[in-house]
Length: 319
Ligand SMILES: [Zn+2]
Image (cartoon, rainbow, N blue to C red):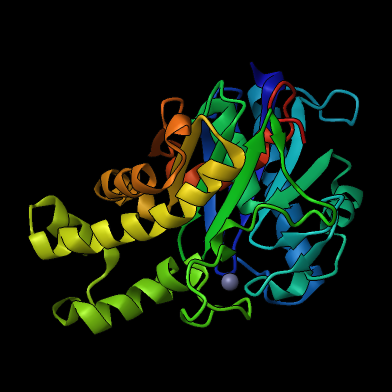
């Protein structure tokens, strides 16, 4: 069991989360601390080195053996980063919230410092890989993962392969445009799904259309909706239907057997999934619907960490 432990690290702009992850996606020794990813690069590298050392120490204690590169009980270290990767997943090309690591060979630099296998990928790709290994998409070879939070991330797994495109940036599902005159998006385009359903987009919708909910957090609104408040329910129906427009397009293009919805919104997933399905059923090719399931992601807040660790395992989505 121990030889199959991996370290998963989820690097965000404000928090860094890490854990030891087993084959089944079980986590232990969780760490959740402020991220230094917007400080100096070497300071951030030190933070990662310290995290890995902590885990080396605890794995050693568990096994009562000396860690050397030959006897390491660790599969390695997986990094999930909120940013755009180069085509080899070695360098972060762009990341609005993790500025110190842009254009830096982060995985290689960490590897040099710790002498443990290190892999890196975009956080949404990591989440999709983790969900495929031990979450909602277990056993599936044709699925699409969407993650709704500050922004919208995504990944497409087609015939067991994560689709990356020629430059490695494929799968930016948050930037599917659904309206040529829609609101400006952070990416420079207009009417992207993220411009509607990213955190700022939802806030704007609330301020304009549901002023009584101004300033109320999504968690509280989710509870209100769960308690049967029709207006709060209408907000989640709006989210589901709007997302459904993009998902219908994805279904027609990729003909997946499964679409999973994760991220911060997944606590409210059951409120948005039915309206989402309705929209997809209205729009997508009818013959594709019989093989299609749409459901919430399973791995929750630690999906990035579990996914980062899952990248080190065999027999999962081909990378
Ligand atoms: Zn966009």
